[in-house]
Image (cartoon, rainbow, N blue to C red; front, side, top):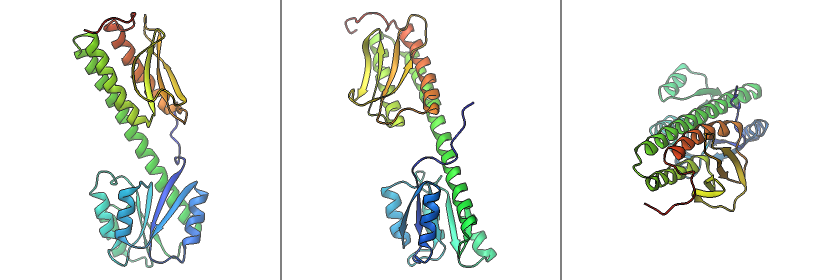
Length: 257
């Protein structure tokens, strides 16, 4: 069984608060969670940072100098790129209206200031865990979609040359998903298809497991593929190997069609 990590490595938290009184506690809590902590004072600055970079959790004070935290939350939730980022609201009071308004804008959780260290740690940890799971679910869905796309492309390919072009196109999409510097299909000691660089370190060699197909799906990247990625790559390589056998691409090189 494959287990999802509780919190991904090198997670990032953005704090949006004009009051830096509790900055030391927040930064210490982020470090304890293995996270980086960035800070900004206004809603507009926060939106600019989020547009330029990615965060795994955002903690927003309800009352900002330029916008309310609710307005920032609405803007982020309306954007598909940031809709899944857990947002926690901070308020100096515990009025029911604050809580209800926050949840109506799809806030993930609430914190009351001054922060209690153990509560702060637990709520930020839960938000980071939620983001880790959402990201993994998205990656799994994308991987399944890529396997289906590859299978359809190979099924509809009319010639071996068209099949090779289909493989190269799907390799490009897979490379982007994996953040790979290069990815190739090696069959019978030769490169059948490749995209990107061939100079980066090998992150994974996944066998093309099908009768009559002797080869590997080779991913090049500075960080090795983890167990989850290898499972997804095995599904892709299985569909790839069947297509290679169907179109006779495991044979010796031949002139293009």
